[in-house]
Length: 141
Image 1 (cartoon, rainbow, N blue to C red):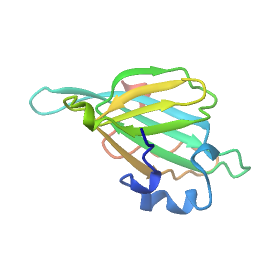
Image 2: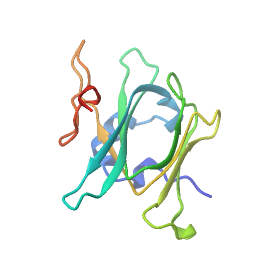
Image 3: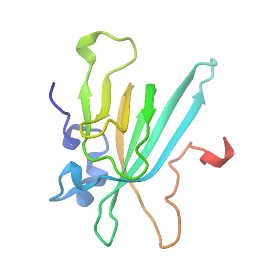
Image 4: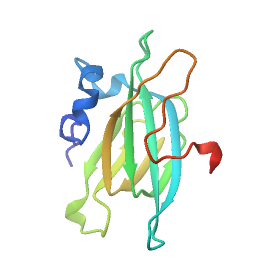
């Protein structure tokens, strides 16, 4: 299977300046990992992951990933994820799951999801990243 490049993911325009000239493996440090459960108006439940990865430069540039409707999650990647991949699983015919996300190197992260979106991470010194609209901070869950 072929990896889906960042340029093909929704939200790429917001992170293009951060990724300019960088390779995906340059952003290998896990800055934050948030796992949330959400509910819609008809009481449907689903889980989402917000993952923020940082590079190893002194400026610590960051890229955010929003994975929606995740399933079969395994994560032990606090620290580094050296080879994260995103691949399409549409041809498998699984209802509601379109992507497989994993780690080539150490299998520190693996799950399936329905959708993926990249987002820019804005930070000020000594402040955590701003949460995305509609997300509750993990400590309130």
